Image 1 (cartoon, helix red, strand yellow):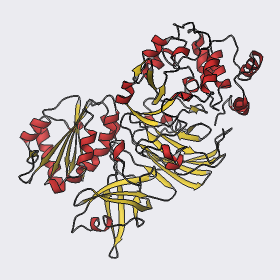
Image 2 (tube, helix red, strand yellow):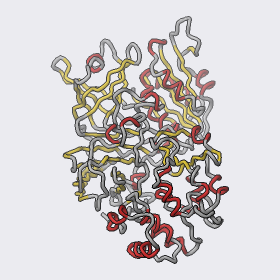
Image 3 (tube, rainbow, N blue to C red):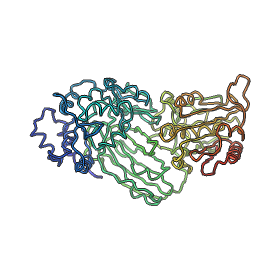
Length: 584
């Protein structure tokens, strides 16, 4: 594990006062091997002066590379570094630091992190009310306007929107994390789901929902270097799978950046003690195991966040003691063949909520264990029923499609299952009758579906028959969060209104005009005002239409439903590679 050059200076950084004289500043800069006349001197000042305890490893290397072609820039959050503006007296970087340390609320939200939607971000688009999003974090830059070296007009170019591309196109190397650390409003939400533990929040009263949770120290910077992503890496070459980490004084985040080259990876985390963890990554043919002995103790469970474009996952643990670690600790790496065998864990029911007369939502948790099941994959549930071991496969669903609808008692180490009770079924009557605190067994992730293989399509059609809807929810969740997806068309088939479930939640999610939901009942009563019928050539021609090179179709439901849908789609010239059928 590579060590941060700036970590040895950390204790001195924390104690440094903002009124240090120029000589002291020069001494600090020498220790991080940055010349005062270089174009990165301002970056060195950021890393050395700011009392956040956050320092970047790659910052100085990257800045040296660009210094040969770009003029210097100090403290610019966005805009063009070539258009530096003379700042008024009292508006230097040092003045900005003093303002940040004065106790003034620069966030505008009382310093309590929150989830910010794109529409809310867009409403803060004025010079006297200016929010900006960079790399998923929303900052209030209202007070920073007069301090921006590029001028107010340059900063206003990114206000009220996600300015990540704008920022990275002109000077991605600027240490905006340190400059704007006191301006954090919260995390930008595009519909992605974040599993979190209430213990990971600095102030429990400030927690929003576990569906899109935030923590007080959202800005983190990498404290290790990492491998460069490789294209066209073969399934057998996993040598570049390395764990990276970053930290604040309150948290440590572990992640695998190069995993984006290996679609369909599933994760398992096990807590052995407060300082010992085991990570397992399941690939198509191999299992990579990382055993970590951390340098200090952390709290369980971690908060985890999935990037729905790259499918990378961050696992963020709260430190039991607030301090900057000099290293991550030690780790042991091993590799074994993935035999695709079922491995079961005991899960405890924490919520059993009826969604309709027959469908139940179960939230379950295993002790000191967390697994992230790839979208569209399933797990096998197993119980002893009347002396006989009975099993059935279920697709885990997201805890919500909208933050307001997070299921009760959900935390980051939970799985959510929607299960239909069949009165004569072998397992469903028993599993849907489980009470809070009772247990059953669940397997590791199973199946071969890879959602990333359909990323080239901008239009997604879904045909869901009954509980076939469960396989669609994870796909909907991800599609809502991805800019490249323009349309999600869900046809939800059921027998009657009593059979319908998750209707209100789908309606709320469809407020995003990207998602269109059509409910179709085959045996509706006279009060039903929606569509009627069963899957047929005419209905699909009307609601799905003929094949398009930009579209794909997912189908899940009973066998007869799937076969009928397949035949009708083939008549509309849909190609096999554009279609995928899940077994219900």
